[in-house]
Each structure stands twice: as C-alpha cells, then as structure tokens.
Image (cartoon, rainbow over all chains, first blue to last red; front, side, top):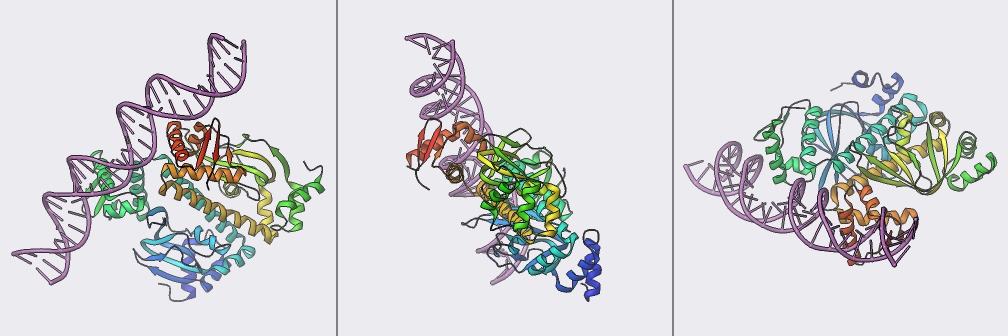
Length: 217
Length: 217
DNA sequence: AATCCATTGTAACAATTGTTACCCGTTCAA
DNA sequence: TTGAACGGGTAACAATTGTTACAATGGATT
C-alpha cells in the first residue's frame, strides 16, 4: 500500500511507465485513489452510476453481463495494465454501468474521476493513445466473445473458459464449483459436470472437489 | 453526387452539421472521397488492410464476422451518421480488417484517410466527441449482439433480425431468401424456414417468395 | 409446352443442450 | 454423533437445433 503520493507515483510507474508520460502519471497519482480489493468483491453492478474509471495495477477482474431474468454471462477478464472500456463509455453519453465487475484475483487499482479523462485527452498524447488502445482491446475482446458464442459448442466454450481462467489467475488450478462455472457460461450445473467429465476422460483436465486442474493448453 | 468540394461540404453538413464543427467539415470534404455504393457491394473483406475510415451519409451497411470454416454471423448494421468503429481500430495497432462489410441499402459515404483521424483528434473537440461517441455506440451494439447470442433462442433471434432489418432498410418488406437469412444468423436454411413458418402462424409476419412482410414490431 | 433451377415446405432423424430427479460423499454446525 | 447443506455423478427424458432427403411451387429459358 503506497504511503503517499510519491509512493503511488512509483507504484503506477511500475506498470504504466512505458505507456504514459511522467507528467500524466503524477496527475493520476494526485487525483486518483488507490484501492486494494479482495477476490469475490463486487466492484460494480448493472445500473450503478459510474463516477470513476479504474486502472488495474495487479490482479484480475471479471466482467459479466446479465439479462432481465438475472441470467449471467462472462464477457471477459481484465488484467494488469487494462482498464474497463465499458466504464469509459460512461464519460460520454449514459452514465449507468451496463455490466457487473467482480474481483477475480486480489487486485490493486487506481480510481480516476471520470471528468479527468476528458481533460487529459486534450492535454496528453499518451493518454489519447492509451484510451484508444483500451477501446480497441475491448472491441477485439468483445469480438472474441461473440465468436465464442456463435461458433463454438458448449464443450469448446468450457475448455476455453478453463484455459483462459488459468491464464488470468496464473495458476493451472481452478477453484470453482461446477455451479459457478455454469453461471459464467450461462448454462446449467448438470451440463457443466457432464462436459467436465468428458474433458477429464480426454485427458485435458483432472477433477477434484472444488478444484479443477488444467493439464493441457 | 456532389460536383465539387463546395457541394460536398453542403452534403456532409446535411447529416453532420450538428455533430461536427464547420472547419472540420470543410477539412473532411477536402481530404475525403465521396462514393456511391450499390446494394450487395462488398466494401471490405476480413484481412483487407484498412486505409480509409468511412462516414455513412445515407443507406445502410451490414457488418459480418466469419470463422475459420467460413461460417458467417451478422454483427450489426450501420446507418446514417454512423461510422465503423472496427475500422477506427485500425488507426492504432493492427491495420487489417477483422470484419466484412456489405452494402445493405444503396449508400453514400465519405472515405477519410486514416492518418487524418489522429490529426483531427488533437485539433477538433467535436471530432474527439464524435469518435468517442462512435466507439461507445459500437461497444453497446456489440453488447447487444452478445446478449442476443447468449440469451435468446433462435426464433427470437430470427424475429429480432427481421424487425431490425425492417428498421434499417425503412421498409416492412424484406427481400431475402431463407438461405441468406440463415447465413446472417449462422444457422441452416431448414431451421429458418421452420421458424419463419411459426412466426407466420403466430401472425407476426407474412411469407412470400423471396419476400417477407413484417406485420408486428 | 417442356425443362431447368432456385426457393420453399416438410418429414424423419440425429446431435446438442437443458431439466428433473435422485444418488453418494464431504463438510460443518448443532 | 447426527443431520443439514453443499458439491458432484449420473440416468432419463424434454426441448431445441442441426441434418438429410425429397416433394412442391413458381420463374425463367429455350
């Protein structure tokens, strides 16, 4: 936990030095708020009004979509160096979140007041690049999600989910119940159990209680 | 067809006067190329390198995604006042198109060289707003597409497709074969025929040869 | 008129996914 | 120690979607 602004500048530099100008990093440290968040923390809900844009320093965040009946779907994970473009959306146009964000792995973030975003756009070229780059990454991530939904069958989606999760959490062991996975993929627990069993038989994973080991990538 | 730059300025003003500064519109008219494109024209293919960003004045464009096997999926339609954010993606980072664009309804567009985009970002506030607004619209459109894929059944997707298409083409009559619809929804012709019959029985549409009439919205 | 071809309708069947029900084993609290 | 709650396995069945096959229709062409 950075003790003061100086320390925060150093902390941000660790992850953003090569992306953002020094002057901008100082501004971020001055007007941003550093936070440490625990796994499982619900950072944002659908309909919440968005006042801050998060910069992710460490850890991982999962971004979910929900329909009217409350059914969920995992959109993508945010990792170190990412920011949430769906949040940036809120600086122009609507100010309500259209997604849910849950900490997937203990995270350190810096919250930036959204009015700064526009201010820095005119002022810092590196900020413009960063913001655009973020939008692009997000658009491509959404494309990927669409491809997955449209072109893959459930067993492929499941396997992709497991390997993807292993990557963002930097661990081949996934600590989830079948029910939780079912929520993320928007299917039922029985279907997940069935397909996990198949994946185990084909030697790609190993099943334990509350735990799945990914063997192949 | 505008005869000269003066006429093009007027033409662009018709659609963008309230969005973009006058000075910017003049610049667009100077460095942009006006084009008229016919329905069915394949404007861009996956893998094409992107050198221009299109501003849509009239008509409609459909944006498709394709997987390795050549299976297609409709992502969304672009309409008057829209631009293609997936194209803007190409100004930073990769320069290859990740989508296919086909004229859905005779269109008039202005092609802007992509290097102008960055130049104008620093120079015109209205351009920044426009570009951000476009990104946001596109992100939300992609979210909508994801919702549709994840939460709707095929009959609902089909009905949504028909009504959506009626809106962008500004006509309740849809001139498509069942096979063409099947491609857009990434399913088979037989499935489309079956579900269309159901929709007809429920009184939402009326079927003809090469033609579908949307009765309810 | 005869023929061809694209389009649509439909039946029969297969594969995938979703649902219900019930099992067993583990964990945890009373 | 007992029982409830949770996590997971599995069978049986239902619903949805995909596939194959073939018939019927209507235009277009010769």
